[in-house]
Image (tube, rainbow, N blue to C red; front, top):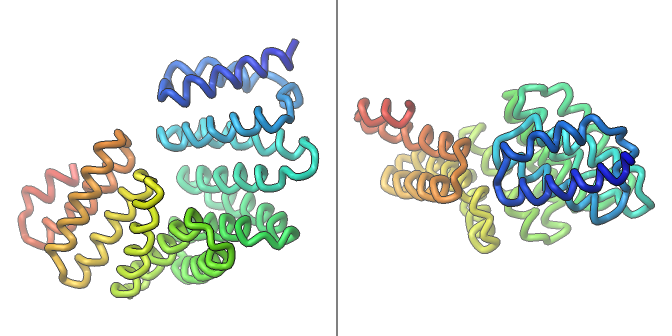
Length: 273
């Protein structure tokens, strides 16, 4: 009874991943992978659980697991009745980010191009902003700063049109990162400050830890070392609080830049390590 097994496995994964018991979830994920994809029910409840599972793996740094669940979730959402286009977009944009983080930039671009066609057909600003944000991530990782500038501008325009605070904080973050890449420090500080305010209001601490680090870099390059130090330490504190090793690594690397500028090589080396 594949359908019954699939329902049990998805429920078990949602419970385990939701509680942060990632290692315990792995056998269930492997069993789910062995079932025919059509055995997973195309219901809103199952699709929602799959999305939460994918996000849980992403937050835990299990990128390949995240990509696996996103692929399955997008397939299930496509089989569902009409009205699930937004779910497909959520899965595909997260899948593209997973591909990008794994260094598979061509796969990420292909996934985003498909998502852009889907979002363009609906003329949905929220969907377009998400897809453009995905392109921002791919562009940044590829070192394509012209592309990052372009897509961050488009992302912010769509986010402002939609007026969603959740979208605005990622759009300002992307725009701030683009300005950092282009050495426009004051503009970077402005956008990243707006992003941090929105993330703080939304209690999005994972995003806040990264934004604080980038905001510290903007202050650092402007020669505002005290402000840079404050934001770097905030970034480290938030990252430590959420227990994310990936975010903690970014925070420490950012703070090491300041110690390097100060000429305190031992402390910089310690933080880089």
